[in-house]
Length: 181
Image 1 (tube, rainbow, N blue to C red):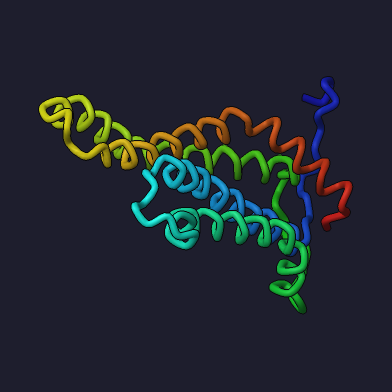
Image 2 (image 1 turned 180 degrees about the vertical axis):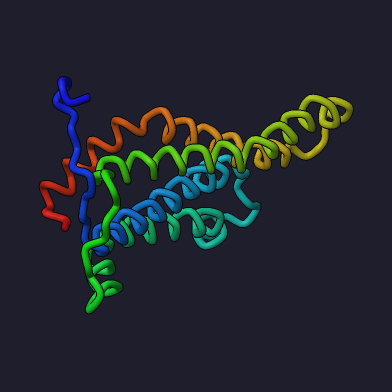
């Protein structure tokens, strides 16, 4: 490994606030990934008979709240991390792990979590689509909305898992530009 120029120090110290930023941003991404299926489900929902603005926009409310909270948490992560670690922002030994390693782990973990937690529901609803709904084609197409969420969550997991390296590079570069500790 030394001949490749990949020698790492035996122990890396990272401020606790930096680790908190990574965890908070992981939750922000989780909320973002949860908002996407909600938005698509709301867009696919037939319009109510009452065309009042409130009735039309209400299905979008949970997704919009997730998006607002995700953006807010992302933006406020450094300030929240300083607040949480105030007085105890010591340097934590994380062995030979770097910020890039932690972000990579976070994306791989998030991807696997989304894929594994949505796989069974996706298979269940695909089975339902292929069996029960075929027997009565006039049945309410509500099953499609139930299928959308686990399938989109599964796809978001795939994107997170297989894009971990690219997303990690972007976040590390972003942290360097914004001087996150």
